[in-house]
Amino acid sequence: MGVKLYIKNMVCDRCIMVVKTELEKLDLHPQGIILGEVTLAESELLPGQLKEIADSMERIGFEMMDDRKSRLIEKIKNTIIKLVHHSHDDTLMINLSDYIAAEVNYDYKYLSTLFSEVEGVTIEKYFIRQKIERAKELLVYDELNISEIADQLGYKSVSHLSSQFKQITGFTPSHYKTIKEKRSPLDKL
Image (cartoon, rainbow, N blue to C red; front, top):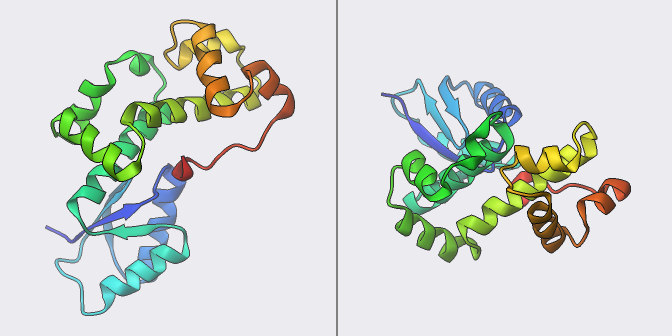
């Protein structure tokens, strides 16, 4: 079994590619990379290599994690990002608490308390922020109407999407579409 590294702020496939390239530059051999986690072929790291990896990750906008709670928080975030930004079916219609508990393999009540304590926001609010960010992206693409966006993001009505959108951004989806305000990076939500 290889060395496992836990890396914060990985939110997309490009992040995986960049981390892989950076590790290879350090003469390491990533065997498996998923959002937030890397398995190296190496069975152990030489003295100083972990610091070298941490410095390298920091230069490209990532951060090494070494405690269990940080890894759990990052796994929750990555699960939500994957659910909202990378799913293409009716997965947003699921029960969020059951989904996260199953994906992270922990009791949801514990995860919810931990997330709120560390992040200062509930899992549900983080989920809503991600959905609104996805709505902003879809509005900018201008391929779907607001009703189709609401449906794709699992809202029961356009008014529910519009209400949450305005609460988070200060704009209605229609008004946002005309101003094309700059979107937020996913790791900053």
